[in-house]
Amino acid sequence: MAQFVIERDMPGAGSLTAPELKGAAQTSCSVLREMGPQIQWVHSYVTDNKIYCIYEADNAELIKSHAENAGFPANSVTEVRTIISPATAEQ
Image (cartoon, rainbow, N blue to C red; front, side, top):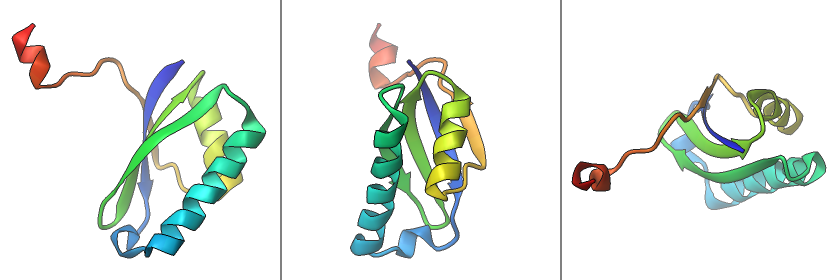
């Protein structure tokens, strides 16, 4: 599976309460269960007005389908080509 970064424009996302975030996560997981193992949510970063999600999927179309079925925006879906970190400097 490839890894993707999804950018979701969600004004006020940083002000969502724990119950609201839990509800969004439950909605996402419910749709993912219906879609099967070819798409997996890894984690998300919530900022003031956006949520950046990391997913693994067979293709970008699955990411877009998940967003549509869950009712979430997917303003940008970008495949990750490689991952670097401070450890990269040591290699």
